Image (cartoon, rainbow, N blue to C red):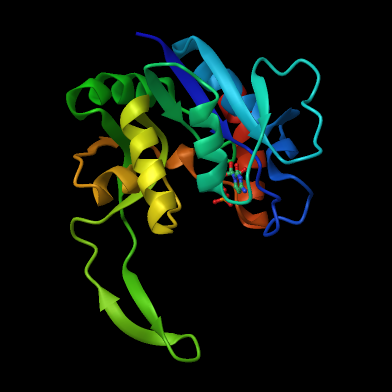
Length: 215
Ligand code: C5P
């Protein structure tokens, strides 16, 4: 079957404050260009969802569509824009994708039709109480932080997205939509370098890592 990489890149980057986040550069390459280049070797086509009104950057090795108001809507538009049997969904905002992780994910997808990269949580967890005080401790045993890429049989994920729209259910990732429908999602061990560039601190980390990654 055919495989497509779908890259939601239509976020406005409010928390970073540097314009559309996918276009922010680290080590001379945009977050988007790094994400496209990381997945292209594994797939038959790469599709990206860009903010409305943004012209695709010259030389981008991907087909571009206009994204939606939320990540979830951007992914749904991407799913409808491809006919591939298998899709890898990856946040443009995670520019460092270790090849072994993609390989392990692609091996896991056929088992249940859905798999996500995730990392066991290393920090102590707490739910904040009133006034940013220590509320209730949350045992971290068994908790994993979800990253991307995530891999799916396209038809399975499309049905889960359509059900979410029908129910008005909002999610920050795609595997959660499968689990919500009672589907099994395989967890594949991720990598600290797959962190999402969200805040200025994340951007500083990404800019420090880029020369090491590219060496
Ligand atoms: O905002 P956050 O960093 O969690 O977004 C995750 C990914 O979803 C980013 O790559 C962002 O560009 C993308 N996104 C999108 N459409 C939106 C909002 C976010 O494609 N409306």
